[in-house]
Length: 382
Image 1 (tube, rainbow, N blue to C red):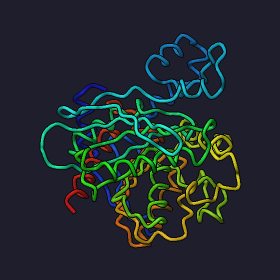
Image 2 (cartoon, one colour):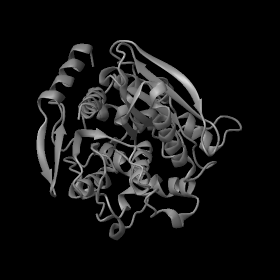
Image 3 (spheres, rainbow, N blue to C red):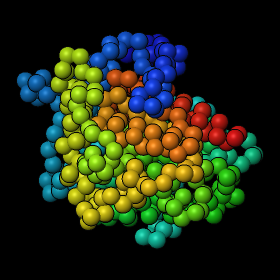
Image 4 (cartoon, helix red, strand yellow):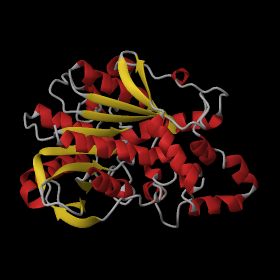
């Protein structure tokens, strides 16, 4: 897709959004005009149809795809002496483009935590002497992988476009450090920012949390702990297709997951693959992350299962139409709304899980950055 077409699709996302209501939940649906209803977005479909059949016939294409960041479409062979978890981590992520507007300075800092030192990367936009709002960002990766580098470009762009300090947190990963180690790191980072707000040039009353996938789950868990502890330090949350429950029990979660909920006009295998790969991996990820299965229903691990959502902060929830997590995310948003929280839900039509990683390739990723930046700007003036 050339730049002119990309910019046109980006405008469509901003101009053609539609307000809908799903089981009492108001949400904004955004999609590009070249997407046919019941089909995956053409850009996502392109990734899913490069595909395995062609790769079997032309193995040289696999190597070319790996170079172009299509790693997740193909099983990666381990390197000599490499463990399964090391292979998985090596093949996670996507090298996105830098879409930052203006100069944003990044600085690596090591901060204290109850489990040892925590590495963070602080992005500060140029200009202005006033204190700025802050957004702590927790990367995705199934609680077992991912890194600050994967979300580097989205974080920089949010800082620049939102005129905010964004802090990218390198929390501990499972299985070496099972729950709640990573969550403790995230909460300790919140506490450190709160205590050092003046030095960092941050407004103490405008500290928010954000994250994608597992990182979104950690962000929502931080909000739960913040409210349950009566500290009320977190002023807002941005949740990008977050993991908000570790349980698969519909009686516990309050909803039943079904493939039939997702519109798939031609029963396309790419859509089924986009939905089922995460479902099929949940048990293994739970085993690595939780360690003790009895803790799965703790709200710290499954923030959807909190008993009381009263007093939760303003929330931006972003979902993808063809994401296994969409139903639990919309249930979480529904609970917040019913408790009186201010909730804005955006669903990107035709999109799959983890689309934010693809800044510069998916126009939806850049539009999502703009939505986050706008939300932070708005909350900073409330």
